[in-house]
Amino acid sequence: MNQELNHKDTKTQRKAISEETNELARQVVDSAFKVHQTLGAGLLESVYEACLCHELDKRGIPFQKQVSLPIVYDGITLEAGLRLDIWVDKQLIVELKAVEKLNDIHTAQLLTYLKLTGNRLGLLINFNTARIKDGIKRVIL
Image (cartoon, rainbow, N blue to C red):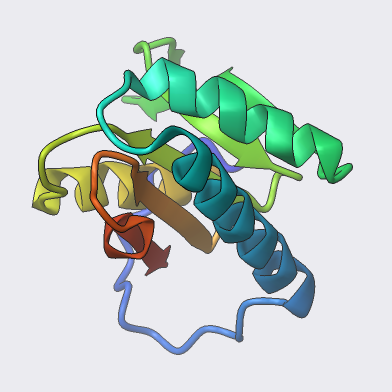
């Protein structure tokens, strides 16, 4: 895991997201649809996390939840309380929300997690929407 925050130009050309990572993202989105269809909006983020993890587990998709993410600052590794909601096969970060509306700070949070892990693809999923497709944002670094 790359633990140094990389402030290089994020506009440089990068290779495409692998088909394996894209397939994991499709499976997560499909699982999120199933959870939202079953539960609807209005619950706590932790409930959606537990149910989404259950769906991923049923599909045999490897993941870790609530992964501690240290940060390197001034040459020192610090435990700063950062946690990835769900890290799918160490390739895809899934950041869950149950908020009225996603905003720029949520995207910035996911981008920071992508930089710290060296991953390129993340999904920001807000379950507090009438239609789950309106609450899913794909973020690429």
